[in-house]
Length: 329
Image 1 (cartoon, rainbow, N blue to C red):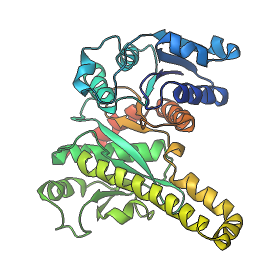
Image 2: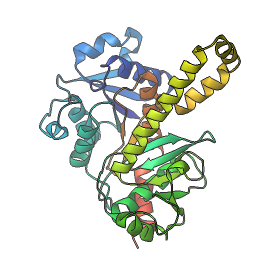
Image 3: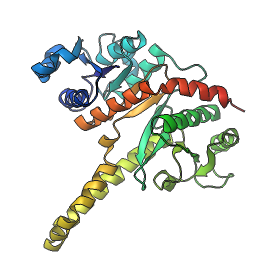
Image 4: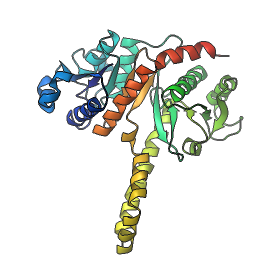
């Protein structure tokens, strides 16, 4: 198992990315390749681990405020080099917390799409009240979609939920402004007609169903999916902030919180994005995990575990089989 990390692109520099990669290396057996400026990377690796870590040095990297399309010409950038390694079968997966648009563009154009997939999609994990996770597909790769695109997103999400998350029974819902078949815009109505023949499809769902454990896969375009994702992150952060604020407001609150420490710890873990690692880019002919720019070491470690699981379970082969089994009506 060979995993490449774009070691330059995160919001907080290389340190948390490399720390997370090393944490993963201590728990799982794989070959780690760190792509980036060797002068920055090498001092962050302890001497006892240097034999297990390969550094592919390149000076350039794509900054968050740069255009995604600029990555196509920046052949010495860390994400370009990492994607080229995946394309040339030098690694089995790439994990990046850098410029997500650059990562998606390079993965799509340099590696290519799976046969039968018109557009790749980001698959984001969301917490559920039962302790499991639901998947939003797409969470930001495609802001405008046709019904055929959404149909493919549903197929890919179901395969990921089955083989990576391990759900024995997958339920797929189409995100709309009501559960009734007549709700939604023209695109979602047309998508409903395509999806209703799929055995996993349960119909339209609403935003609250993302979290209530009534569905495993949520299908939507990237515009809606990204708004839902960012809004959910904001709500989670606000809840934690308000809890702390009100607890600290009185001695009784502080005293009561001592007895609730374990509960708060479980809540924080369940809504912490770092527990889920990153978002797989489904539909490209390789394994690519896109992480949040502010990812800490735990998030990178779990993203690497996601990448390993995707390779071990041959998720792309499962998607190709699903495309053959459930052809567009």
